[in-house]
Image (tube, rainbow, N blue to C red; front, top):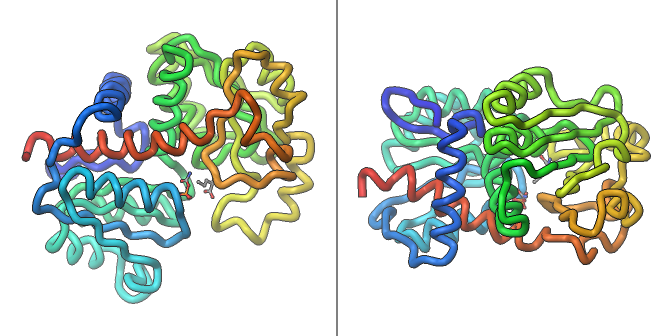
Length: 310
Ligand code: CP
Ligand code: NVA
């Protein structure tokens, strides 16, 4: 995880070494079936959310409660980060009251500023650039259903967005091959491709970029997609609907991957856009386990952050 003056932050999946990604997944699998360690007893974790959320907000709140701590939800209007006062001040004030700050924000730069000025750990609960907690839950789900991650072929169809970036880096960290099919102009950012390839070179994972969903899903063990228009991009939604035509995951595309492939989506989904109606209920869909695994992975993240101090 990123260190500022000895404090560990999780702003990007790349803040975890490949060995740490693997260890975090092991811990999450253990905690899924074990009583939660009371590492947050007497502690408070702030949930600072500038965007809406169901899964992330509720699973963090429940995880914090299960670990013996108190969750303090602060919505956009309460804090007014960068509006009511500078982000640097929010960090310096909040970290005098709470023991960790979980943040959902529009800009990765906000997370970086918070981490720079905070004296407690900062965890990315989704930004424009990354969604690390989601990617770890995705890998845990793949591990559970496929019995391994190393050597698994993950095909991502659609926008090279926050979820795609974190998933690619996390997958390559454990040796899963990552193929991404995106329309021109919506590819994975260069820096993410570079980091994914760098990790892939260490683990044997191949990274393939294409504009053909059919090519990406050939031989895939996992077919993954996410929304065409992420939160904060609403003004582009019509343009995106045009650009992503042909990038919808439906039963025909799943059939190209084969019977053993998993269908995954971080949710919320938009049937009729990135997925056909009924895909969440497709026999190969694991989306609800994937959503549940957010809880187990986030318990592991918090348990690891506070284990040494408990
Ligand atoms: N997948 C996910 O992060 O969902 P929410 O936006 O509901 O938190
Ligand atoms: N890419 C989506 C993910 C939501 C969980 C978004 O950022 O809106």
